[in-house]
Amino acid sequence: MLVENMVATLPVIDALHQTSSVTAIALHPTSGNLLIGNGDGLVQCVDLNSEQNDIVAKIHVNSRIMDVAWSANKIVILDETNGLHVYSMSAEEVWTSEFDAGGAQLIVGKQILALDGIGTLRQFTLDGQEYPTIQREVRSVSKDANGALLVMEDQTVMRTDENLSPVFRRQQRGDIGEDIVAAGQSIDGSWFVAREGHALVPGDEEALELEIYQNDLMVSREEIKGRVRASCTRNDIHILGLDNGDLVSLNSNQHEVLTTFQYPIQSLKIVDNTVLVGTWFYIYGWDLESNEVAWQIEHKGMVEGIQVDESGRMAFYGEDQNDWTGAEPVGVCNLHQERMDVDPSFLQGWFEEDVVEVETNPEIVYRNVDDYTNLLSAEEQKSLERNQNEFEVGLDSLSAAMEENLEVESVEKTEHDIDELLQFLHDDAKEFIAPQAYAGENQVVSTDTESAVITLDGTQSDDPQDRIEAWSWLDASGREISTESKLKVKLSRGVHQFELRVFDVDGSMTTDSVQITIESSAS
Image (spheres, rainbow, N blue to C red):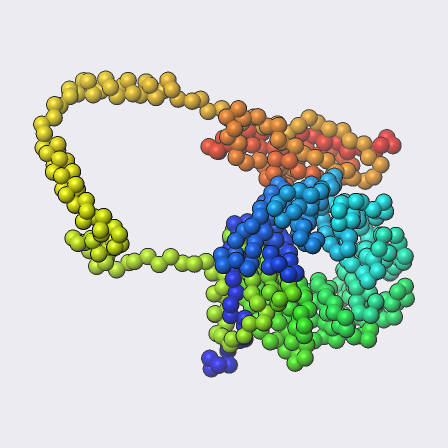
């Protein structure tokens, strides 16, 4: 019975335990260096070739890391508040480009594509020169064979050349609109669009379709059973992962469901003849030749990213979406290692923290140890023998001192000394002053669009004793929107109220509020 329940796995997996939730990773193709970005604005570079997985560089950008990437031996970082940064391996900034709306999506290849928080897409050379052409109102971007594919806010899909100039635009379909779920490169220079058509009558089934294009011509349209969540391409095959667990291959403009996993597919990668499939709780290795699962690895949450270098080393990360648990570790393993059949309970072993075993046997815990010399090292025992006489003299002197008759001070003098000590402590005590929160001056901003990006800045909050420990920004509903001292927010036209709370190390709190008015520049 046990044999029937056994599963194949990759048995040797290193767990890089984290103190904050991981938001992005990037594995260098040849050097063995792994970038790990987290929600606190820290990027660490880990040397996976070292015995202890040494951290060789740390970079702080003070804002949530949206994505990281390698450009040759330079580190590219996109963060949520500030924008785009490029650093050297020694953590020195090479160049940076600040975005008013922060960063949202990053693609690094021969050029750097960076999408900001309000849908503006910019392109940079690797040395930091910005291209003159930009695209606005972009919802997401993916690479195409000769440029980029842009899903726009109006649900059209734009195909561009390598300079971001439009070469084709797929218009919105349907009388009552649609949602573009995904768009990306397919095989032989083709590309695909995954769409969701809205139901005309409430309760009717919505249409989920996959369109295949060759240049500007749609050559195929087929219904699928789920929404596309991930895709990957090799020269001769294209794989899609759907939110219903379907693993789909595209060949000759037709799709085929290879298998259906228990959970939604979130990430995909093709390595040789194996598709790496990241879902909730598992990574599966799907063999394209045998059409079956060759191995599986368990994870604590949803696998959000998979990276593989040229040697076959795989790094992966995920999140369990639970604020009450600790950060999930980054996993690292070699795809070429020999597989092992194990009981499914073994799969959890790699990500469990090391447990310190405590001795609980009372005979051992409460034993009397008269001869403690066996607990010493050889060097310590030699030192003890050389100094034994000095120890004996010291103990005799201590015993004699303890037997001396000491003069007992009067109770009155003792109480007087205590009073003097308390008075001294009171006079010398430092007065603790609560911090003064400052949310900034009220603002009135004019714009010719429907919204504007505003900076909320609490860094001028004052504490002469430098004891501020935490910040909290709340919107008008009382919902906390950030724990950073400074952040950017996108606001629609109207009047908006925000409250800043500042806490010191003792938990004392002061508050301040600010009003932001967004009005039309035409008014």
